[in-house]
Image (tube, rainbow, N blue to C red; front, top):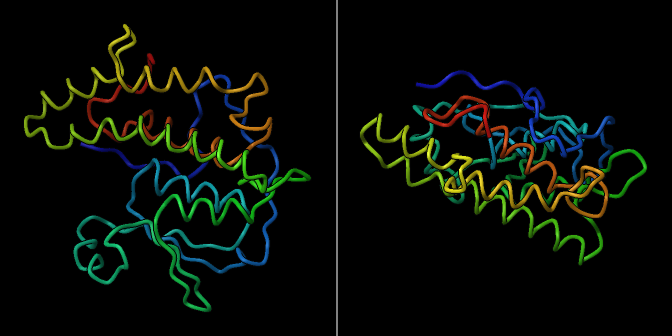
Length: 219
């Protein structure tokens, strides 16, 4: 069973070292809306991080949540057979692939007087990509559990991934990444970046109660 997802930014982030911005971002000409984002009605990377970035950017956008029963008809019309898909409502540009979308938005969005959410400096941009890729490595550990037919076995397998006794692969992965977060609460360059957005969305996807067997507390 599942329960409805809260809107972007509604999750209370439980990792104590993560720092979220207090001010909305500004955005460059490339990101000027109106946009329409299509993704499943579910939390977490990859789609939720795009929702989060669009919300932070302040650009005009519409959140179109596509139920699974409608995806079958929509899928053959998409470029890569996957979502999220971001479409410009005026000029018809259609953009896909979650990490490419996130970088596109983050390159244009700026928080207050700081630089863009995706750094212009090549080395810092690499560090952001490195963190995002590491988070995806952790997130994807849960994918094989979707193939377990027995519900009790599936829930037990998922719970084991979050065990805090040293054997929980997802918990240990997050723990390793949390150890790399700076004392100021940011993952890269002492400022809020795409990497922080990805961490926020990924951790809270697991804590949202959306996935059977994944504990929402205690890790």
